Image (cartoon, rainbow, N blue to C red; front, side):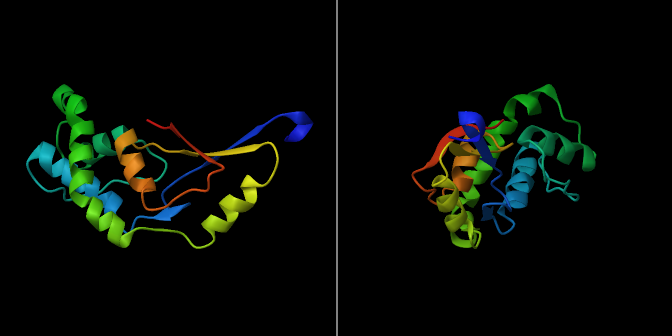
Length: 146
């Protein structure tokens, strides 16, 4: 058990903490924007620490497009379709960062610590990101995200 006999939840971020997506993340957002707005984006907003919803909305604003209620209702489908199209590139170019397997395994041996991932990605895309690696059996793959 952790401090004072309590369990401790350790949440790992996925992108650039556990995996390198090699630019596929920005390509997914650009493709989703193109599918929704009918044109390629000229400007990419920052993605670090943001949810998919916030990234897509900011992408529209940064590119002078209006993010309508219809866009809000369809952005998840566009992201899923974009990820589906780019998943082969992710599997080819994405990888677990050096040292991560050893750290995950070492932490899994500490009594009272439960490891999981936390992400701002929609669930289907979060599952695609983590398909680039196999977490140790001690890592909980319950989804805590958008």
